[in-house]
Image 1: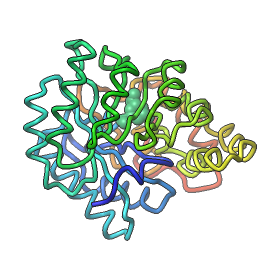
Image 2: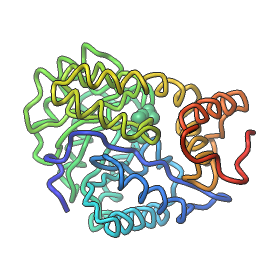
Image 3: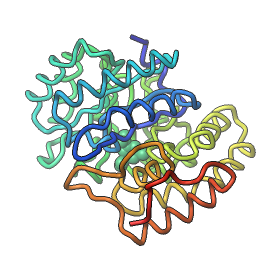
Image 4: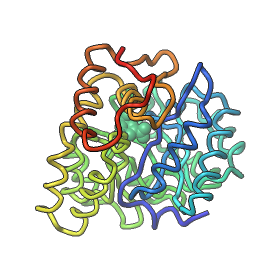
Length: 311
Ligand SMILES: O=C(O)C1=N[C@H](C(=O)O)C[C@H](O)C1
């Protein structure tokens, strides 16, 4: 597997997990991976928020990882892949790390423990225990509005010194905290944003890259924004950002990844827009808005697949 730290830049895609009639949809998954492998994506995250990882059985996650690696290999694309993990029981996560140690992945994206609201010291000890054990490097996922707890910069910087913790996916939603971290972090600690609507600000502030669910759509434009801003071409990046900034809001106007799955279904990339409960499909109002946006963006390309219809 790859040296993950050296690959933590550019645009990463947190892949949706396609389902059909309640089951993991292997055919759609293979189609998705082939599609994105041909686009300017620097890495993939599996089974995170967008991948509905909390709803997958361990055997399904193993099958998903194997399929993704198989399709990437057949596409000739050596993309790094991180497995999303979340949980609030350190011992259970240690078991998961042992069970997945030999899987064909390059790293883990591990969210802060949710619901129990531990102290900063508790989270430091949690991530150190996981990183000590992990057979692959660890990216921390700080997303307080989902977990209920914010990993502050003092704790983050202590964790950044751990040899097996290589970076952060930041969704702290606090620009001052984010900028201070960018100023104080060691160079070996990568910082990528996961705040779709704030992508421009985060990259302009100095983030190394972005992990964006919205980039399932208009992938090339998102990749251009990341690449051009990194190269210092603000005007060039702005041309692309203006075509996608509203999209980031539309795709998060109901719980993600329902709007993205609806879009991928309507454009023929997956066979069904279904999610696993408690997540539900988009409302009919949003479906109509998405259809209008799809029509506006794809009028020059293929029509919606036969059988796809507004709900
Ligand atoms: O699945 C992810 O990883 C992402 N999660 C964030 C969220 O859903 O809150 C958003 C980001 O685009 C990717």
